Every structure is written in C-alpha cells, then in structure tokens.
Length: 318
Image (cartoon, rainbow, N blue to C red; front, side, top):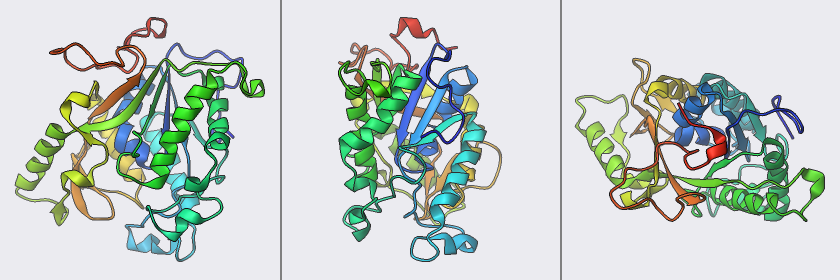
C-alpha cells in the first residue's frame, strides 16, 4: 500500500501525527499546502493519502496535451510524479495512494460516463475502500484527520467519496472487533473538514479584480472555489504565511493542473484549467466536526490556530 517509506507498525512515531485524505494530486496543496509545510517543519508526522491518480484531469500546458485521458491516457502516472515533487517542496515524506497506486481511477466530473467505469473511485464499495485507510490509521495512529465536507467541497464525485471513505475509516479504525489483522484499534481525536470563509474569499477576489494587471484573463467567482461557508462555521485558521513560498512552489509542481502567476516567491494567485485567477491563501481554514471543541468555540473567541489544540498528549505547536 505504501508508495514512499513509512514508519511501519511498532516503530516510534513523533508525538504529533496528522493524516490528510484527498481525492486527486494537487487537491492537497490547494487546500492544505501551507498547513502541511508548517507542521512538517515542526516535526509533526504528516501523512497524505490520495485516492486516485487524477487520470481525468484537464491538461493546461499544450506541450503535455497528449497525456490526457482521451489521447494517450498517461496523465495518471505523470500526476503521481508531480505529486512527489510537490511533497518534496512541502517537506512531506509519507505519501500513499489509497489501496496502492492505481487501485482506484479518477471518476471525472459528476454525471460523466467515466463515473461508471469499473475502477472509478465513485463506484468503490465504501467499506472496502475504508479498510485500506483503516490500515494506515492503525499504523500511523494520527490524532488529527483532515478531509472534505459531505459535498466534497464542490460536488466532485471523488471528493464526495473521499469524505465518505475517510469518515467511515475513522469510525472503523476505533472498533476493537473490526479487522484486527489491520492493526490495533485507534481513535482519531479530532476530525476537520476543509473550508473557506465567505468574507475572506470575497475580499481576496475583489482585490484580484481591482489589481492593475493580472496574468490571467479573468478572476474566479465565489462559486468557483471549493468549500466556501459562512464565517461562523469556521472553527480553525492555520497561519501558514511563513510557508507561503513552499506552497507556491508545490502548486507549480502540479504543472498539468495549475498555473501560478510568474513573479516573486509566494505569488498570491493561480489558475486552474478555467484560466481564472484565484487567491493563493497562506492562511488555511477548517471546520472542526469531531473532537475537543467540536460543538463550537465560545462566542467572541478567535478561531483555533492549531489543529492539535485540546490534545494534551500531542504536545504544543511552536
């Protein structure tokens, strides 16, 4: 199952352990790149599980157009290489593909014929897919899990399925009677869903529209960004400003999917295949749905700033 070296059962692990579950290569950097770089630099064991190779993605650079699924269908292995390069930029050394590289295929956008392919992740049995993730959870024993909301942020079938698999795996991993061959039971202490606060998104998009010049022909709308929620739903804001440059370089590594504006390190906008500028956020936002303070923080308090807050045995973030 492991694509890069991992600690393995029975070996010592750092005190703090973070697991992120994403659908395709590049999702992790867009949503959590600064967070991953921050925690990796602080000695946290950061594990990324990616559910597909992203075979159905659109290809931005004309010189790589032949990789696309409707031509050579070679995009998946190429994106796996991009992901490895992005993880090197973020300092993340533990990355796996769910069930092993290529077990599940990118399902394409909702309603397309690709959704019905035999290996499409959207068609995967949830419990079967979750078992692969249970094995990772029982090996790494993360205190914190990050994944998508029930809509997958924007309705993509693989994002929705990643949410279902991650949540199911977290429940199964703690059950003492479930699949002891996959390791000793483990309870994830805190579960977060990725999100973006609407006021922040609106402000940053307005700033892009007001910019005297942009390297892209247009600016995205609020609906183009995944996981936008009202401000009161956001429980946690992780300041990754110190690692913005790493996030920008990791985004550039995903060159088939993302165009980052040319310029200084830490550039603050990028575009997907729609060629619409969107902000490169160094502060990343989360909604705590299970664990300490999962019912919300007291009125008037600032959001959490640490995904490990409230877990005494996980130590303190620097």
